[in-house]
Length: 487
Image 1: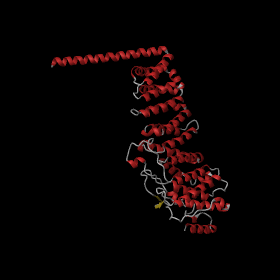
Image 2: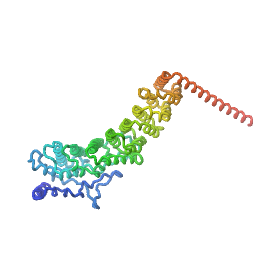
Image 3: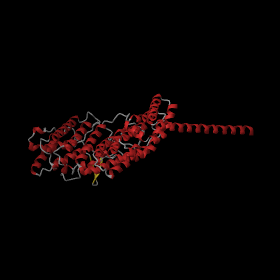
Image 4: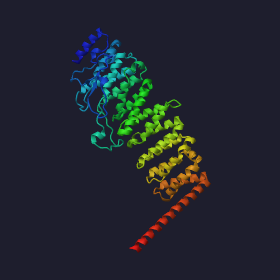
């Protein structure tokens, strides 16, 4: 049946303008196509159809079994026929199949997979002729039909659990990946190809297309997110017109994640893209980029699942400080604002990031924030969780940080001296005890007079505290005696 339609289309095509009307797509200028109307619904991850221009248009369903016939390979037809064959293969690739049943329509699935592989080779080779503009539009429509779909329910929606740890869960693997991977590969090869004219391609890879790509980052399949990351990064590099829109779109995803859901599968991948973008920022840095740091990146330290994306977040934050050292004070105060109170594993992450930021911090910025900073470090030194205390003491293994501390020891040592003494006298962990002794000795070697002064003040403070406690006990004894006599 499909062969008859295709043959009839070929005859008509030879008489017409070759715009592809007879291949089931409508004219290239018709924006009411199936692909352009498919959306990704993330509020509910539901729905199978999209509303476009008041008309509900379903995704392309699979054809009846046995109606799809294999097409010849590109090398088997004359060069003059390859664009036509390209279009016919695109049409086959628009059909959707049920991958939940691995035994259903096996032959048709394999034909589509072969067609996708040949399309990828055709775009990648470049030696078989440039793709016509109308075929480029149909190709993007085919890509849209396949990838812009309703994502399956998230794992927490399936189980009803609110405390799903993405690090412990088995990653979700989409059963339709054998086809999806080739579709993504085709899109990637099209975007990076030197034959792709940006002026033409941006008509089809438009803001709406980019927005839907961003929505797909919530996919739980890590393979899909990896492709999306590469493709979006390439689009950002090639289509300058989309750059502000992409940054704004990522911004909005972060805001929704921070202040509404605290659930999103692709925060790490989006941050990886941003790491490269930040690396390319020109100096002096625009105010827009600084606002992004303050309003989006620093608040990303707040959500509970930070462990799943902290490495990428830390890289982005450090990039900002390395680009503009004057931002160090802003970043450090931001970290202190969101410093965890009861989550020890999160504290360890913060201390590691703090070391990277301090590595890029200059003396003037260090002096602006050192008082609140070392008050927090002192609390970490006395943490009963040995990993937190140990990680805080490791800061003194960094030569740059030690130099900053040494230059400002008259301020730093009085703040943390009591915490050091308390660790030596009463911390339960031997490793923490030994590291504290080393840090204490380091300060003694830096400035003996300052160390002795701090020690004298500490002993006075301890004596005053002991005297106050004795007075309190004496008052209670008097009250108890008076109560006994009165009774």
